[in-house]
Image 1 (cartoon, helix red, strand yellow):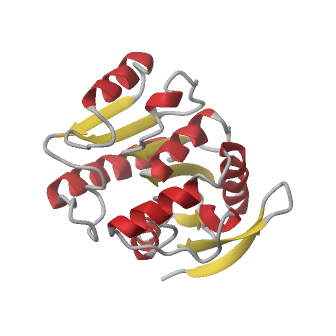
Image 2 (image 1 turned 90 degrees about the vertical axis):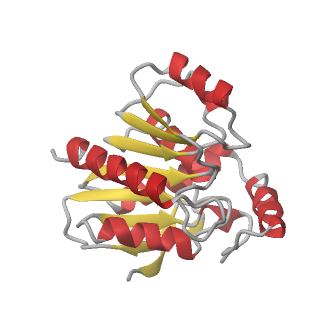
Length: 222
């Protein structure tokens, strides 16, 4: 189990972050939230990486809009999460990601994100030089920023039946980013990696997680 700390971004904004794992680890991972905040699921994902020996930090990216956000997965929660997301600018999101990476300074870093965080993990690869690898899970904003240039190896995971990310969009990402590993999980829906959602698919989660873990083991080894 980890703990909540406060981080300060370059613009002076102070926000919460969940940290876990050994502080003296040589490798670290920034874990980025869905639109539901740093809730139980995100803390659980952080703990899973921490159990592998990584120092982990999950920044509360919604703190700039509302502090202490921990939503569930009802339609009302989805609406609230989208509303909060719209209150953030992309540069603000990046400031907080950079602050999270700075907390792990001196370590070889990976970044992984889910949903909104999946898009932001892509930006971590393209708009920051802090990371040695990025794993992006069902990031709906990736197609819209698909032409950005990555500064590190990137892996992406999409569900074939994701109603918010059609396969035509995934195809455009593949075409724009031929060096990126793009995996599509047959029959999987949006959020297939979250065991607290009705769309959870255990086998697809396990395969995507295995690929992510191996990807980080390879690229963060140095």
